[in-house]
Image (cartoon, rainbow, N blue to C red; front, side):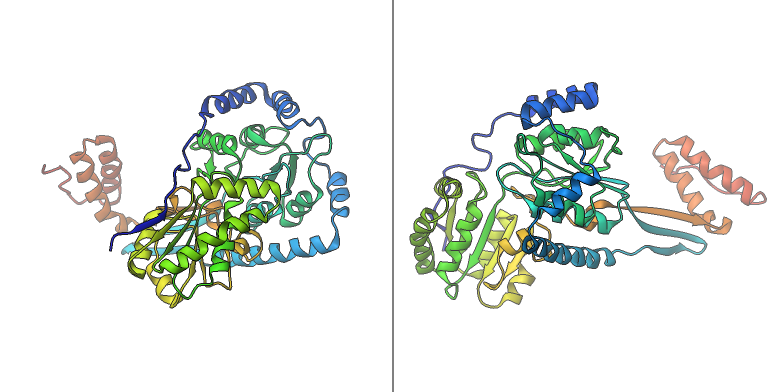
Length: 435
């Protein structure tokens, strides 16, 4: 049967998005020209903060002392999980060398970038999990310098929990600055910082646009849009848990899509009936986001069977993908497009968002069709090298000379010619292109 949309989105993640590019470009240009003073000016205007930008050791220690021990224990638990998973990821990448031809050896080497800039969202809440995810992976990768930047609260500064998380995860510098000005400061190397080689971390549309504009001169984790989540569920799923998970992800923002894909109409209808009450039970700010996201962006899709469900999911390429269905191994083998996968009701996206060890900085808006999320690998450059004996270069030099001349690259060809002439002076080679 054709797919049946029991609930269809009336808006997309791009609907109503304001054109922020010009605003962001102006701020970046101002700060590039004006340096530290201009960045501070924007911080006063946008962050409503006039305190110290780069935290001192004493300020960091004082903030850490304010964090309750139970919260410290939770942060340490999450940090340990993320760290150990990142270490396992790093171990999966090895330096190699291979003898391509006798005497000609090529190799691969993984080198961490020197300086990482980690953006940690702030505002009303303390997003300690983002500090854990971004700073820990950079530290495990081996970056020489890690800056963590987060928006300060007016007249207060950074929440102590964010300072503690960034500090224990390995940040070398902690900045009380948010928004485009923070991205610019890390990119241009302001306030005595080394110029960042990569900028990572979630943020609002202005932060995302700043990273997009700067990409090329600096690496970024990805160009991110609103967070999204998809649940694949069959008739064995618990409708209350499915509905709760959908609402839990919808609270991210008014434009955060959530999707339910199922082959069971009764389950779909049960979930849809439960969602409104679960939204109503949320605190006001969370409720407003979840209500708008469910009303305008959510979809419930009825498929013919599990193969159609999997194909539908791959088409959406969600950031977060949950499977609450039989035969989890089948789904693990079949599914191919997602940022992070959560198999079975015993795990949930919220675990990955906060503490289970996998990273929560993930591709959105269908980008999971071509890329994964933030990992220790994002901070590492996979570079190649080669060396050769004179005999080993003989055959490759001849091929290089002829291919170069075919392409009209005479200078390249002569780089090969000169070596053949030096290493094999008594031999004659046909180095002309036959094309």
